[in-house]
Image (tube, rainbow, N blue to C red; front, side, top):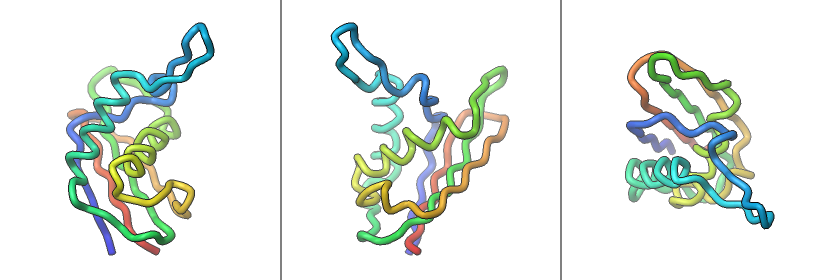
Length: 113
């Protein structure tokens, strides 16, 4: 079984995902919350049962933007769990990530193994 969604935004990098307060509290940034809401809309009603998963993430960076390819998956996987598309990112056994240049967007494809 396979589910997929298109998000009209690039995921925030790990560096822009979580902030730490002076008191030691951790919180998600507004950028991360916005991306997670967009993933929830893209995957509305799409759910995979508890299984092992393969996830492919393709994201496009806008002109002049930079991001390491390994910084995108964290927010994407957390968003899939938060919206209920997958049970837990601990069940992801395969992860494929590709970065492109162009209009900022993200394509996420999840399949049961």
